[in-house]
Length: 340
Image (cartoon, rainbow, N blue to C red):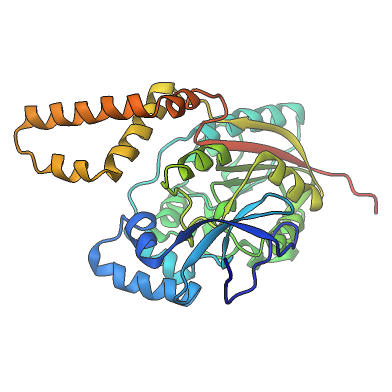
């Protein structure tokens, strides 16, 4: 498949690729930005045209390094996210990756008694993580957040924690150069373009022995759904899809070594339920079932469809039981010692 723009892998620089799937503006509006009211969708469509042009976007696999990414590799504009955030539902109060990171940060602090840790949380949401950390582990004065959502940033500030609604690379280096012992990127990396510049910016702010906590969606979980033409990575919101090996290769290039890697454990029933509902909602019978007003008949019809899906998708349902099929993954890095 040929494009009018040049396709370059953001990790290895290769121009050799395999097409995975195409995302039209109409599909992105229907699936990636489904929280938007109709009144905002025209504005969002105009923003997508600015980012992509009329061709839309594709997700591709680099043949050289196997990295999966969107092309054009362009993140949503500030106006795009302003529209999206103004219509978003509430952030989750606590996530799996928060708990793992919290416990590891607690261990790091216990190993360095007498030293006051400083933490930077990029894309802090509504501050659920840093508010908990500030109450137990690190003084509020030693925490800095960035968050583009105005509501999220204002709430964090109301809790006495500094939060800026700006690119972290605009922070004054005379104040923050090598200042942070712990840097958190929870579900942020997959939204970004200009990845090398981003990591160079991180390195300017990271202390000598800093730890970096990176949570991203689980590659294997997303690829599983690709097989059913259910695309969970929709540009320009999600631009990349990371395996553990991708993360290690990319961060190693920027002088970070992996400490540990974790995949979110998830109850099999929850994975099965989500899978069946995704399939059901793609079937035309789901629209018909929604029109059946009799509650009992509606439930019987849905039950019959779910039984049918369980029968025809037995191999896939078994595969869902794999331990690598959690929704999210967390990888922890430590900054390498670089000889001057």
